[in-house]
Amino acid sequence: MQWEIVIGLEVHAQLSTSSKIFSGASTAFGAEPNTQADAVSIALPGVLPVLNKGAVERAIKFGLAVGAHIAPHSVFARKNYFYPDLPKGYQISQFDLPVVGQGALTIQVEPLSGNAKPYEKVVRITRAHLEEDAGKSLHGDFHGMTGIDLNRAGTPLLEIVSEPDMCSAAEAVAYAKALHSLVRWIGICDGNMQEGSFRCDVNVSVRKTGAPLGTRREIKNLNSFKFMQQAIDYEVQWQIGTLENGGKIQQATILFNPDTGTTHAMRSKEDAHDYRYFPDPDLLPLDITPAMLEQVRATLPELPQARRERYTSEYALSAYDANSLTASREMADFFEAVLAEMSPSPQSSPASGRGGERENQSSTSAKMCANWLIGEVSAQLNRDGLEMTQCPITPQQLGGMLQRIADSTISNAGAKDVFRAMWSEGGDADAIIEAKGLKQVSDSGAIEALVDEIIAANADKVTEYRSGKDKLFGFFVGLAMKASKGKANPAQLNEILKRKLSG
Image (cartoon, helix red, strand yellow):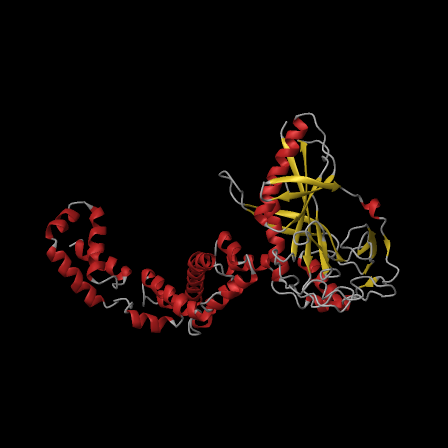
């Protein structure tokens, strides 16, 4: 019998409100410790929480995006436990009546090893509930003591809980990435993992094929997809090794050490009854009206899955291209803005009897645009450590350059020179093409004259080509491109060369 891996995720997404979930204190990152800890955050006697409407709207938005049931009536509860950075001694959260019920997220899984092909999978979402964040313990700067920063206390979180539907590190990472992209796409979370805005807890267990679920261990506070993969891989091997050696797995909360690549237990894992949940007496139940639901629905952008389907149907792009372009909303919006710069003229419309030509032109432009964004643009962004929003080339500049490839003004090689100049110095494509002398020669008469000279100067090679040595065609192309200083239109050159060489 083989071992099966069972994985579920609990993801904490910090909601993008400017104030905390139960008070007006700021949620801005980077303030001096405890300067944003107001009376509610530090739980002074007599203070009362007031629910932030923006946090509720963001939770609803997420629920709609994953096709979940939005509860018309939900309740906040007190989750009781002691920790130094939890000033009240309890956390306001939701328990048996969360605002977002069951939903699902479709993920694209790229296997991490071997020759397996990418595949699609649906991961069920159990629930998503609103809660407040705790403070932060600072261990490094106090010489044997721990500092407490309560700036983060009260920051609104949406905890998104999946079903244990994943069975490999690759699937868990794919799900976490898809969730990370989605919350950024719909604008409810900035997704900054370094600042703790998007944190993942991973529940891992193993079992023999067909056996009941094994005992799970929860890996806490993973803020890197790379670390998530490493932590799961190590934990799976540790659990399998423990069981095969006759040991037992104890339910526990564990941490991953990226320096050693190992996990270690932090404390025994609590169950729900350990937290002694009960409804918070200071907060009214949350009632969501149909009108409020429709108001939030109207703010939803076109979702990633819908865009992927549109890109494959409308532009005939491959599933790979569509997935890559929708990895972030910024990339997808950039793609569409570039494509708008390359749109066919209004004369090429279905009404004028040229609808098929327009459609083909649109597909060709989309493919060219996708290739450049996924290839050259993404590579240069990675090399420079930039996000899509920091791209030094505007969609208008890139679209103008790609249009010059499409209308044969420049070659692909010339376009790379233009791209590099745009990236480092700015400017539009036409000015750079003119300044660098990159315009292609598309005059058939000039190309014919150049070909005639080459054929006349290489009569012996021409004879060999005509006797059946077809591979010599590349030799003639190379001579012609060299003679034209790389400016001859390749399509025209090939056509003229074939005609002339055939005799």
